[in-house]
Amino acid sequence: MRRRRISLLDVGLDANFDAAMSFIQSTLANINIHYGEPVVDIDFVRSRDPDTVLTAFTASCDVLHVMAHGDYVTDSPTFSSSDERTKISLEQLGETAAERGRGISTGAILADGCKTGTGAWQKAVRDCLHGDVTYIGTSTQVGWYESTVFCSAFYSALLRNKGKGITPAEQAQDAAKRAQEAYTLLTDRNCPYKVMTLSPSRWAKQAFQ
Image (cartoon, rainbow, N blue to C red; front, side, top):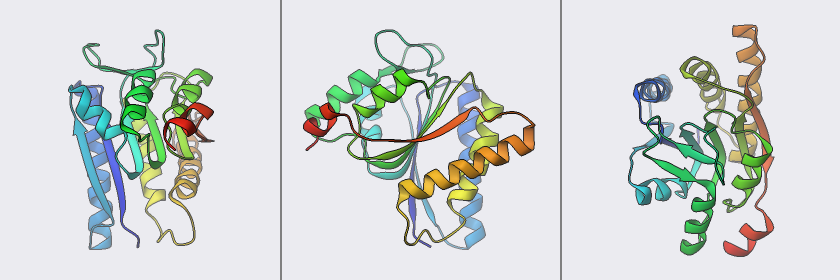
């Protein structure tokens, strides 16, 4: 099985976010144990330092999983901590990435926060992309329960096979759709996580060429 790299980025910085991230790390660790050897490398960043967070956003990986509040929107869609001391706007991310000449470079982005699947978020994310990605955002408010139900199904589906002949973005899209079905089956509710393909905006293509 091809070894995947998953970046877990906790911008939320409170007990509920920490509990959800711990659950996800345990799920991935259990999958590694199941296969008898590591099939996934986990990079976990939990920080208030803007440079550290921005570097984590643009690190190469198969899945970039960002956990934060996502509905605190002012001039730009923004990831923020519970106490609002840490805020990373997508406009800020795009500008800093352009200065460094490198946007978000991953197969999939899982924006694990409230209302991150709206049109405003999609537009802002496109300005930060180095290439096409599978984008997983939410249509409503989500919490610890919604996150752990969806993510356990998503990562189990993502790492169930060797992934040969399929790109990381395609594999993430398939896994997300399976996780949506599992969520509905387990909870008898519509899944709040939405999956789509996003391409770099014209601005991003010029900034990261």
